[in-house]
Image (cartoon, rainbow, N blue to C red; front, side, top):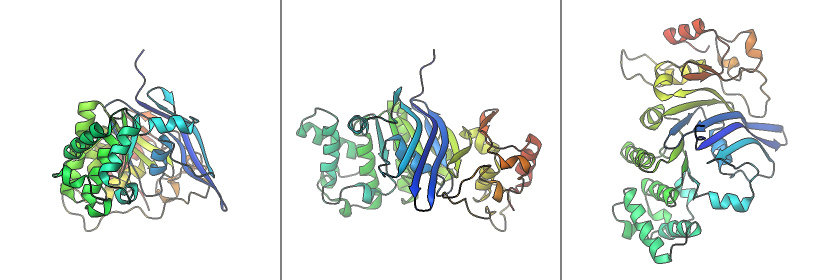
Length: 335
């Protein structure tokens, strides 16, 4: 029997009770991540990417939240696990790189003390040995003066250096899984390239699985092995990065590619955006959530399309293959 993937998520749902009704942030998400594999999770703001990451580590603590489905890490079910056991897994089995390092770090503690605290919480290392490891980690993430940075507070560092500190904390206990929520969004391109290289080295050297959330399709093409496209809390298309980038099969995926400048060919007079807005999370969506924005919507779209295999990819769309080929050729996906 083949070994189970490192991370297995099945029919994950996250909803919040509000005065306006139930808000569905994640609506039946399923995917796998193998050891040493990078999954890129892309989609517009509000599509449920961050809530998916938070639910993996049990970080949705709102008493009005309702979480169901299955999240298995290394064969162990995390949904319903006791808070005490989850605290042992966070940092050691799985860790998270947050989008904003300034709010992820404690402002009243030095960055060195925070890394040491993380190491000692999940190991039996002495304070001296943990400090030596923290200094080594700061050097590995590309900080030129680890000894000088160690006693500084987060506000005394640049955005790029703070992000490197957060990454050092995330990898300090050598977790088998890293979930990264847009870790390069606020960084300049040179620092972004260095951080992507660091994450790639981690997965190659230590077999670390990574779930990488980003809006930047260029970053996805650089680091990811597989891509999952989310819309309105659902995965609408997934597959190997090369296949999906070469031939997107869902109208929404194609719309995302149309909204970025082409690298080759004639320069278009203007970029083709996707008209309209994603559906409000407070409004229930029974059929295809993208149908109101899709020019190819037809009667079957009133029911929810399942995510079904189409070659190497999986697509949640009722359009026949001929229509998908046509919108790929014509470059028109929405009206």
